[in-house]
Length: 411
Ligand SMILES: *Cc1c(COP(=O)(O)O)cnc(C)c1O
Image (cartoon, rainbow, N blue to C red; front, top):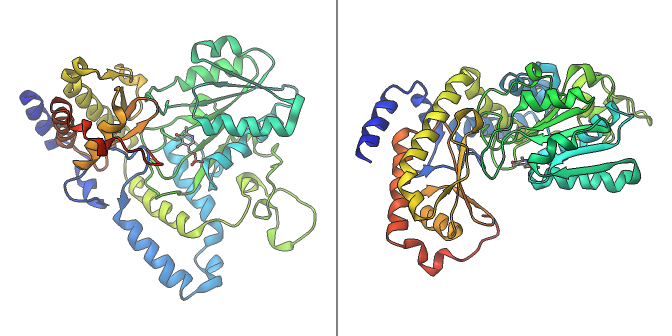
């Protein structure tokens, strides 16, 4: 490990993103490797929330919808996100949760491909994606078929009856990155539209939606974007589809004239038609402030450091592979997101023991330990600190303490 320590020091000394660490409030001594589940708190969010509470809500009250342009916040936050995902500003809206946005874009995609009636997805996709599609299937009955298959069967499932191919770019269990350009092109070749879930992509590297020809996308605000617990999510609709979408979740905020209060729904022009109800201004303000951090950053720098951190982690973890750790994440950098996962038989207890040492990752059933690498607030030396805590816990059987076996609701 000694040569790795020198390597880590060298990499940290030349790290162009190291100054960003100070923009986050993190507990002293904690190595936080769970920014892929809940990003850390940016200090500027504290200021922004205070201002939104005390001045905008506390003093200006309802006039803030106009005075502080609350009404435009979903679209403005959408514009900030657009740059990170290779979209145009008017193709992205920040709103609702990823799950709710999936409901909206699945119905929109089906509407844009009206002669087809099949949705293809990966049976190992994140469960909410599958559940939302199942809910829509219950609504539509025979008019919709769900074809959920193993990843190696996706290609043969993609036939000329498919309306929509719905995939998540980064596998939440293994951290594997799917080939977005390839799958989008394959879908297009059979006349299917694509929906990409960017939950573990946005903020981790430059997503290239328009360059790939993607049709729809959704993603989370609380993971790599650091928008806070339950932060608003976002949705993307490619410009060429926008005018064709008549939202099924047709709320007044997506109406052409919400304040005309007419009884008939008429969609707003553009992406605003995918808004449903009144936006969560406190959470959106937090997300907006968190996104300001990305404004001055080249996503290529984030990607470069992310790969450097995960590479070092995998190298340092190698001795543990003889102790029952099985690497689930592809070694090939282009096939990785910004997380590394191992299967380990005692994964749950191990993660509890690790957290007791202020090294925070998470656990996914049945036996996966996950580590997220967030270039804005992690150093290479943090990575090695995490691995040495892990080694100690494994070598000394620390995880065997019964207190680490107690299951909590959230893992
Ligand atoms: C985290 C995650 C979600 C979360 O959806 P919510 O509606 O925010 O709970 C959805 N999809 C994927 C792939 C995720 O990783």
